[in-house]
Length: 462
Image (cartoon, one colour):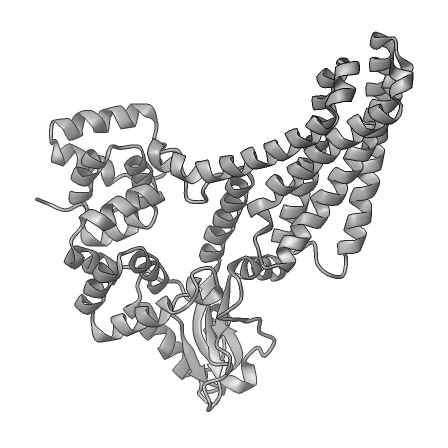
C-alpha cells in the first residue's frame, strides 16, 4: 500500500463536511482520494481528524501514512487515541516512528509504553539513540530534564567563529527538522560559559575567537526545575530557547519555545480539570467507564464533606423546628460563600501557577482577599438581609442572615487564600484539592454561623 508524504500542506478547517467525506472514502477504501485530502493537511489537522474517528477507521487511515508522518501525527493525538496506537502497533513499528522524532518527543512516546514494550523498542534503536533516550527517561517528566531535547550545538570558547559556523551546518544537515537558535559555548570542562545566536554568528569575522564575541549573560535552567517554573522563566525573559544544565554546569539539553507552549497548555488544562475534580488526562473522547473511574473518587470526597456539613445542620435541629424558614435560607449563605471561595481560589491558583504569588507578597495577597471578602459580604449581606426582612416581616431574621453572610464570605476569602498557599508549601498542586477543602469550610461555617446566630437570637425570631 502506498504511503502518504506531506508535500505542501495548507491550513484547512476540519469541519463536519470534511469528516463526512472522509468517512465515506474510508468505508469505500478509496486510498487515492484519501491521500489527496491528507496531502493538503498539516499533521496537527490530521491528528484532529483521528481524534474524531473510531479506532477501527483510525487504524486504516494510519496505515496510509509514511513512518515519518506517523510520528508527526502520533505526537499530536489526544491521550486515548495515542494510547490505542501504542498498544496496537508492533514494537518494530514504534521503533521506526521513534527514530523519526526529536529526542524529547521520542522520549514522551517511549515513556507511555509498558516496560516490556519500551525495552523492545529501545533494543531496536541504534546504540546512540537508545542511550540518549534512556538518559532522558531518567528525568521526571514534569521537569526541565523531562521536556528537554538532546539536539543542541556546543563549541569551545577558544574555537573560532568559522568552526562554530561549521558546527551549525553539520547539525542542520543531521537534524533537518530542527531549528537551532543558539550555539552554546563551553570551557575546557564542558561547563556552560556563554552563547551566540546563529543570526549574529554569520555576521562575525570567521577568524575571531568565540570567547571574544560570545554573550556571557545567558539564562539557563537546571534539569530538576519544574516545567511550570521553566514556562515562567521563558515568559519573564521572552526566551525562544534556553540551555539545560546539570548540577556541574554542563549543557545536557535545550528547551525551545514550542516545548513551553505545550507545557502552558498542559498545566492550564491540568489545573482546570483538577479544580473540577476530573482526571487530568480526561478528554471529550474518553470512554464513559474510564471517565467514571476517574471522576468517582472525587465525588466520594465531596459526598464525605456533604455529610460533614449535614452533621452541623443536625446540631441545630431544634432551632430549625421552631423557625422553619431557616431551612430555606441556609443554602443562600452557604452558596454565596462557595461562589466567593471559587473566585478567590481561581485567582490564587492562577497566581501561584504564574509565579505571581510568592513568599514575599503572600501576606499582602491574604489581606487583600480578606478585605474583599468583608466588603463583598457586607454588600451582599445588607441586600439579602433587607429583602428577607421585608418579605418575612421579621427584621431580626434579616440581621441574622446579613451577619452570617459577612462571616462566611470573610471565611471564603481567608480559606480561598490560605488553603492553596498551604498546599503549595506542602508540595501539593494547589489545584488538586483547593476547591473541595475550601467548599467544606464555607459550607460548614456558613451553616454554623447562620444557625448559630439564629439560635442566639431565637427569642427575637419567634
